[in-house]
Amino acid sequence: MGGNSFGTIFKITTWGESHGKALGVVIDGCPPRMDLSAEDIQEELDRRRPGRGKGSSPRKEKDRVEFLSGVYEGKTTGTPISLLVWNEDVDSGSYEELQDVFRPGHADFTYQAKYGIRDHRGGGRASARETVGRVAAGAVAKKILEKEKIDVMAYTVELGGIRAKKIDYPEIEKNDLRCPDGDAAKEMAQEIEKTGLQGNTLGGIVEILVRGCPAGLGEPVFDKLEADLAKGLMSIGAVRGVEVGAGFRTARMLGSECNDPMGPRGFEKNDAGGILGGISSGADILLRVAVKPIPSIGLEQKTVNHSMRPVTIKIQGRHDVSAIPRINPVCEAMVAIVLADHLLRQRAIIDGPLASGAGM
Image (cartoon, rainbow, N blue to C red; front, top):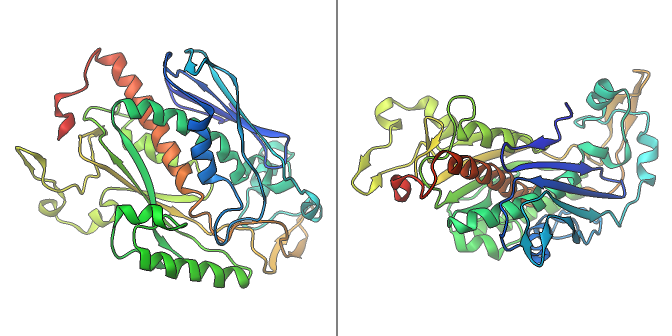
């Protein structure tokens, strides 16, 4: 019940609302004696926090993380890690007129249908602010992956219909949109500015690359690695679709085109996206997510109130023009959490080094 927890061995439970006192996460199953500092987590939270870059919400949150448990003298103790982030710049006034109205594209109607009550301030639990806990937990998961030299990186390949024409990894750190194509990043920034002035929002596509993942992670049949990765990514509010490897392009391929040939050095191409039979192959894992436009727009929209009577609304408040690039570290976090969980599950099966095919 509740659906607020995720994972099997490395298990997280996020808590808190957009306009509540605080948000956070409880992480259970983290191995003991692992180096962990607030700075490790803060670095990731700073990439996600609002008020940075063009088109970002003007809400100013420091998102300073605090340890409540599970860490002693800079090392994990093996007990549950509890992390807290205080909400500081809360302004609920602009939401008062929406208390009895269902906003189009939001979870207002469905939360009311499920619980018979909802926190209308900033979307409550359904707000993207909930992802603070995910990113904090993802930072811990990344520390686990670091030991195995597994790296997770998310970058923007499309925004507002503008696509990256090249993938230049060093370029990702050079622009606010974390796009691997500098020219496309400039066009995207212009599109964000133009769309924001129109009172509208934009969607896009984020690609997630995992390098260094060993072969052997994943649990057939129902806990396939791509199934858990897809669930983790689809649990992010703005994500409406997930692709693995060649994804939907495989529907237009012949078998001879789709299969990845193998040679003495490993796979000669990677349309499978690093996963075969639900188990990692040792090749790079490649995922893409479709990110919908943020539903809070400054244009008039038709909807209904709690009495199901038609009303017209124009949403006020502080909102992003696009969930990208703030969603990028959230995508990284969910992928890291899934991989850390499956890594620990694999260790329960094989005591010692992972599969010899890890370098393929």
